[in-house]
View 1: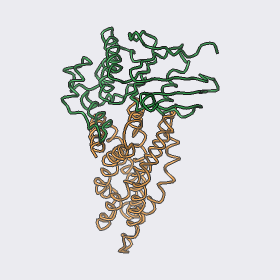
View 2: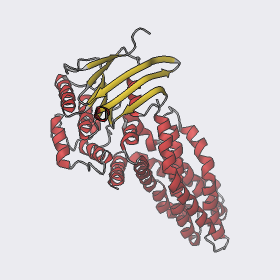
View 3: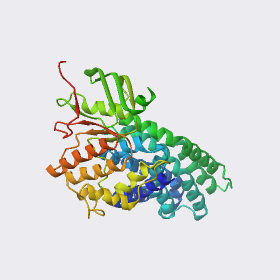
Length: 222
Length: 204
């Protein structure tokens, strides 16, 4: 367990050092949301219907933006290779890494989502569903994304490939996440879609750390 | 017989490796017992680093047999994060190499290690602010933290001043004296009189 704690501590310090890595995706999220609000021009009625979709799509993209840097630095300075060689078990340390990534991306976005909802005129009654969906769904984004990031970290320009690998896997999360809010807005009181998000997150929590470890071994073979 | 096997820290038999369509080495045999030190020499591109990476297990694309005791590897990339302080780097590594039998080193021990490598007083300095040579010294400090018997060093003298190079020689000699073994890719004299030499890239 101390390995897990040490890794958490390390990632925490590193992210404080490189705070632009945390802030850039958040800036992107709110900038893009504001642009949508400006461009639609249709006022509350038009925006409201599209708000869940806009927020979820942009959360997905902002997450993707933050993923590229997840392993890049550690890969370049050699600590990643040391981690894979030394940590017993490596997947635990990698899980800690992804967890900190989530705390500064998905969790931060979930906590800031009321602001996004405000900009897009999302009814306040739908806000709890939006936040709950983001809280439960975004860990899966980080976990699945980490597998893609681990596979592409050895490539010079891995960004486009990363998007190509990861976005199709994000689709179910997008559908359930945005769907839950839309249902709530239509007056259907059900948590079914949120439960599905929970299923996806639990499944990726159990499988992704091993996949990340295997993917990193492949990336380090050079 | 069993005693002889337990003393063997590295056994490489009939090792062959091909990279980018070029044969780096083949039929390579190497044995390192406790206390042994071997210099791995050869021109640039002769496969020194690749051999070391094969032994660590990072590079699985080889033919032949490798049996190695737990290793401690110091590669080209020193595995020191520029964004962390010297102490935080070592703390992380201490936790990483902790095993149930050998718990993580305490802070006092880490500071001792820093004194050995000549970085006393630099505990809270960000590694990104250190010079290249000091960077390597942090890596040397973490190498000593590890209890692994087999050291695999890839050009450990890089960026070090004369005093630092002597430090590397002293660390190697100390490690061998403690019953470890060292395989070191280098272009310089290891300063260990009984060191064997394995030369790669000759007569191909």
